[in-house]
Image 1 (cartoon, rainbow, N blue to C red):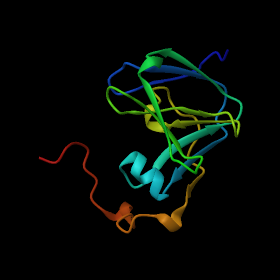
Image 2: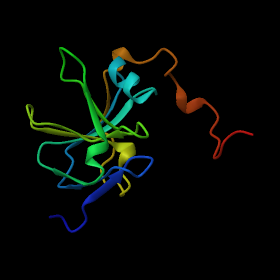
Image 3: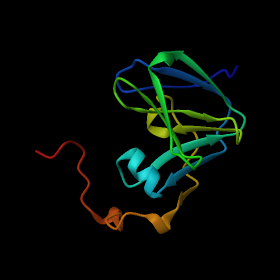
Image 4: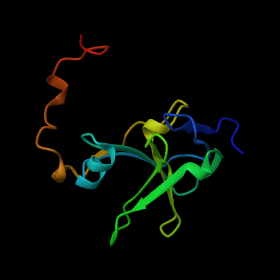
Length: 136
């Protein structure tokens, strides 16, 4: 086991997990499936072919959706809907939503992927106002 495993949980705290091992890639995916999964401009996911996932608590609260005819999968907490890690043993991959991780993430995103599917409003976002709290 790692000296400093990666830990995470869902928003309501019902599901908690630990990951031992390294992430090999960190992608921001703009495909329409990931945009629907995240409800945002892109998903932010970490990938590993060697890390191991341990459910610390709440495994019975995990639901997994697989899009028919594809490898696209999403695991989430049945109580709060938060995205959770997905094991894809058929391709030897662990996919972890970056936002579900509580530990510091030591890898920066490698790339924006599937940019040809990018939302039409997801352009030049660095130029818009930045506000540190909710606008009031």
